[in-house]
Image (cartoon, rainbow, N blue to C red; front, side, top):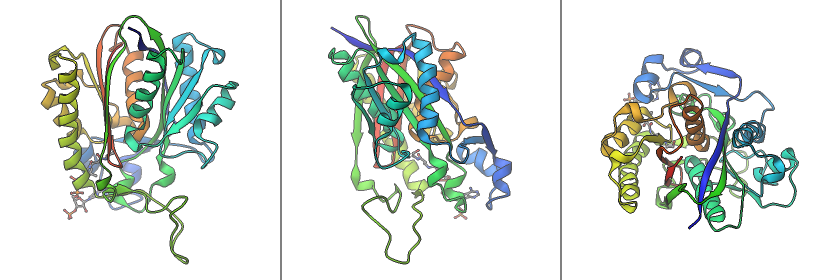
Length: 322
Ligand code: UT7
């Protein structure tokens, strides 16, 4: 049996940092409220003109270096993003051109905060089947572009960034299982009102910012993630004590704590980046993974549980031997 295996990781955060104190000057909020309700203290914001693909390219090059591969080796590109540079060409194609690659499939997956897990699950199937031999999988976002900076209920939460992994075939495990799900009946709890095909009425504002009924999202997120991690553990016939690291989507510290508690995992074995990065949607899981790989916490052979939940609603988990 062939597995796909993470051969290298990378991440990139834009230079500009926006702190909770900075936000106190923009909207009616406090550092204390943001820290207590979310766990976030600061987030990175893309520079004017800096796009999702700009961030993705930097993360991709780091992951390629870490995996010891060159652009010529890559034969599959998939980008999870909710904030593509343009409607088309898709971010995968734009990234392919930046990297000087031609011919391989390149596309984006649109699954909000679960975008990276969805992208990883797709790439895993291609690599494990032998169809792709070196897949570049990205989660990248410039959420600051669809954030209403007058809305305190959302603007304190989100940030920009990109994370990347290279997947290669391996006889040793690798990605063990991926579990994806969605429930579109919740499309009114976390959404943007307009896009390409659905337009505002004539005379209405053109801007299409993130709208979120945070409290209701919170409740469904906690329940869904608890069910999802149990499903993943059960499907693999393991005890959750076998998991070395939980790498959660970084939406809210309280959601992450609830998931860890359900798994019986101490917080020391949970990778947390949201304090310094906020919620970066599809970028959060690969950036957290890369953070812990580079600081030496995650070692070869460790068992990782990655999970995410987001707009749609969509959700996904991957159990992987690093
Ligand atoms: O990443 C994809 C999925 N997204 C999530 O998983 C997000 C899930 N939701 C959350 O993380 C939380 O619901 C939030 C952090 C968004 C909000 O926390 P909460 O504890 O659910 O607060 P709330 O929305 O129930 O609001 C409580 C109070 C309200 O005031 P009243 O009505 O009690 O007087 C809000 O108006 O907090 C107020 N509030 C704020 N106060 C200060 C809302 N935003 C702020 C703010 N600063 N930034």
